[in-house]
Image (spheres, rainbow, N blue to C red):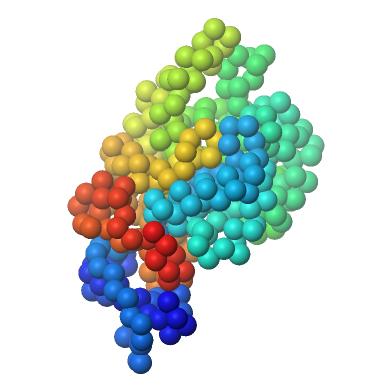
Length: 363
C-alpha cells in the first residue's frame, strides 16, 4: 500500500465491552474514527473487531533449555501474532529481544528483564541465580533493562525439603520491591505454592504469576491490596505429568502439585469473585508453544469467570493494566478481525479472519 493508502474496517468494532462502533479508518498506521479526506487506495476489511489479544505471561526467546537463536524467537513472535496476540508481556527471558521493537510486523513486547531466582532454585539457564544479599542489586539491574516490570521466582522445589517452599526471606523481598518501585518498575513473581504469598503481598508486590497457592486466608489480602494474578491455566494443566515424573524422587512435591492442579479452577473463580484482577497469560516459550492466548481465555471461562470478563482479561482490561492503548483514536492500528461476535462465542478467538498490526494486514 502507498503512503496515502487507507484501510477501512467495517462491521462491529468492539472498542470496549459495551462500546461498539460501525467502522474505523487506518491512516498512516493509526486509528481514526473520522473518514479521511482524499483517501486513495482504500482497502476494506469486514467483520467483528477486537484490539489485539494480550498474552500477559509468555517468554519470547526462550525454550526448555534456555535462550534461543533470533530466528527461533522470530517464529515464536510470529506464532503469537498469527493467533491474534499483538501485545505480549515477556515474563522473564535470558535473550535480548530488543531487535523485535524495530520490526513493525511483530507483536509489541513489555519486558520484565531476566528472571531473578535463588541459587539452584529454578530451571537451569533461565534466571540470574543469586542469594538474598544480592537481590536488591539484581532487581535494580533488571528494572533498568525491562519495560517497567521485574520478575522474581518466589518459590520453587527445595530438594532438601522435598517440596515447594519460599525462596526469599521477608526482609529481602521488601527491600527489593521497594527498590523496583523507586525505579518506576512493577514487580511480579512466579509462585505455585502457598507459603510465599503473604510475605510478597505485604512487601508490596504488584502481581503474582500462576497463584495456584491462593487460599481463603490470602485471597482477601490480594483483593485488599489490588494485587493482580495471571493464572496461566494452560500451563497448570501440565502439573499432573510433572508430578508423575517426580513421584519417585520427590513424592511430597508430586502430591502437592496434584492438589494445586485439582483445585485450580476453584482457586481462580474464588480470586475473581473476591475482586482480584485476573489477566490472560499462557507461559508459552518454556515448554509450551506460543499462540495459546485464545485457549487461555477459554480456560478462564471454564473456571467460572463470566465469558465477557474472560474476554476483557485478554483484551481491553489487560491493555489498560499494561498501560497500552486499545482501539483508541490515534492509537497504533493493532486489531484482529473475526467472523462472529467473540462475546457470544469465545471459540471464535481461535480463528482470526484478519490480523492488522501497525495498520498493515499481516495475517
